[in-house]
Image (cartoon, rainbow, N blue to C red; front, side, top):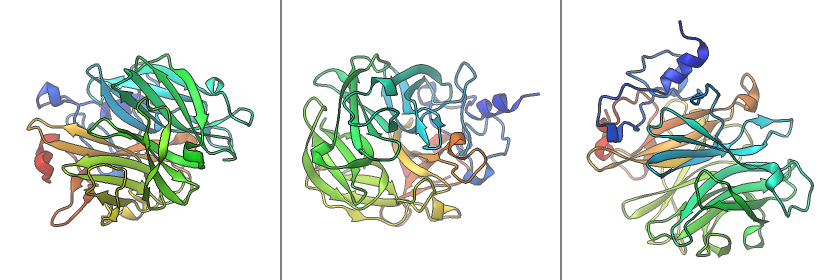
Length: 356
């Protein structure tokens, strides 16, 4: 008989019946069935659970993002929460060939590496994202750096020539002289890097990065008020997914879009709520952190909503946070995208945005 750890890990593994090249595609089940026990052949990941790494430890990569390098997927995120202030001690990195088997690459940045803050440690380390700078041939790590009481909302930067590190501390700063809270970082198709963050918790400010990705060049686009921003491009349009501001409690997601060829100068148009089925009023008890574009066998792209279930009011509270990943599909008969909350079988049935 499997114990809880082995059963949970099995949910993150699949006997792939499609091309090995696309064996990484996710197979998800409904968010409210988090304690069901489907067979590994049917389900890779149950939203609201936590995968285990190859050494049998829980994957702690909250508020993070995903990128590909060296033929692997790399999942970067916050370490486990601790203390009454709900903070993390490190930024963790995991690698996987298939989005099912995770190897812990290490804590690529810890609080004792942070220099230049006008307050003593410990520090708040949140929303880590890694960008590849093709010009400098460096991986650049960004994160929301702050005190436990949010007394100095800023952005921390470190970089490395290897995605797994070691990462060299660069600086902590307030981008464009503004308070910076929840954030993400994004590289557009033309190679331009952008920092997107909640400016003073009033609006989402978008700034192009300098060519080395180590500084911002001024706010060049203004998004709505929100946090947990996640950007992705589909065709000729760019989209930004976000949550409202309700602390650790979930709320309805929001989606905006632009037809601007570059994010600088973009005007954002609000799209329909991307989560409208049962549980959508709390985005299926989750908050957005990233959108993963996954290439399928026919060359089309399946977008995966990556969210955190912070579990603020659940057993163990945020110290027992988990993950919610769901397919993000073009809305049927309308504009925008929809987070599909339900059985997610062979991912190739979603080619060209089709529904099973």
